[in-house]
Image 1 (cartoon, rainbow, N blue to C red):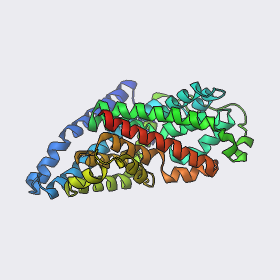
Image 2: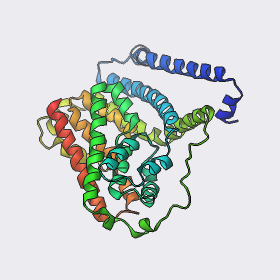
Image 3: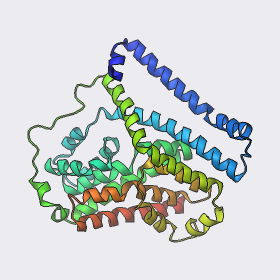
Length: 349
């Protein structure tokens, strides 16, 4: 029996009471997480929490549970909210929109529309076939992975509202400006011809039509399980690297090569981030550990944006629909925007 069938067997009152109880359990687990691992690592295992070993072990255990809890809550809530907005509806809203306004709309819709790098090719084909300009489509493709709501909430929880708002504003600005600039380059000449020969048959179908609250709750639960199954190896590796940095890596090493005094720190951070394959959740523990070592927030945000917006897997997938000239322009424009944002934030923070 599915989650929705279980929920439908209950009255609406019992459904909402069950959700409230689940939220209360989640909050209780989140609140006891730090004192629990303080006790386990410090008292039960007997490690000094101020030592390198004790600090690293505590970081790994505490952050694993904390980020897992944050992901469960965030993914569930975001999926339920996203169930009111589908890719099909987004495509219909952007169809026929001119550049400029279309870029702004595409970037905003990219934040709230279900999209991942694996769907880059079908999304691109579908948008162009629906009459969306290539530059506007690129704003959507940039914003959707770059301005990740999971990353926004994680940044909010780890670093406060300032970092979260800066990330959100910078990501949207990069998506809008990059899409507009790429649209000025007449990118249609660098798109594979078969994309323009594709036609959408019939009326666009809205995959969210007819969903009730039980369906939306089931979607939330299933999305939590699906995403956690996909990312848990990357999450553990990211937290493990973060724990090693937190416990053993000397602070002067990062200050020397990636600190505020190094004029090339942001460029190096972006160059290192592009080959990495991860998502916002997987890279966040590493960002937190580097921040604790004294790296500037601008450099860290640039690194994180490069990982999620310019990953090699997505670029390889996009090669099926974009010619190398447009991929090179895409990387150059977006990369330049990320580097500029990194230096700007380092200057003002």
